Length: 169
Image 1: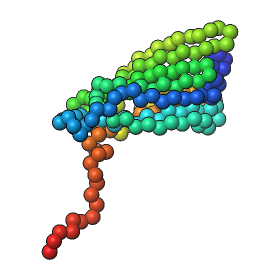
Image 2: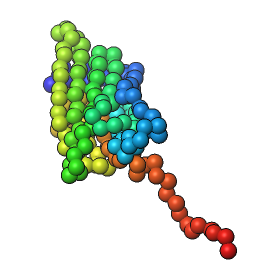
Image 3: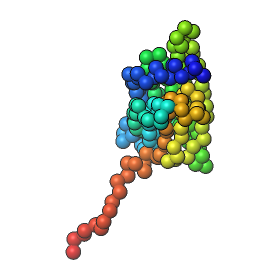
Image 4: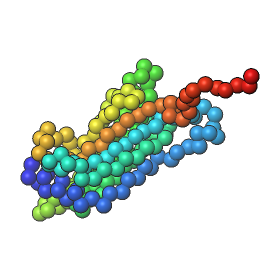
């Protein structure tokens, strides 16, 4: 546990880079793509022992189901690279595939490499939490936290009309 605290402390010196690697197709040019597209909102945070957020990044990406969105966090002794791929199901209970690779330089021990793959059930507009270094039950430990939300693209792109239409009389 002590080694874990020391490499997480190194995260606090993050020179973070957010890479949203999925290519956004031109949804206006290809018929039928707008109906299939989803909007993925990703909020990445580093939370200290006292629950203070010391770093925060928020990004939104419009993608097609089955296409991954990549995220890379780079710190002084840590690299976290994850991909999130949404898969939609007709019953509304969708699945998010989370794949991660983590490189940690532990002082005196060298570089440690870990991988993770999880399938996470989710619904539209439901917030899902992903902890690349594992879930920490102790709130007194620093952590990396990634929040993900999916919603249909058409709901975001459809303008909301309020008020009445003023027609000619």
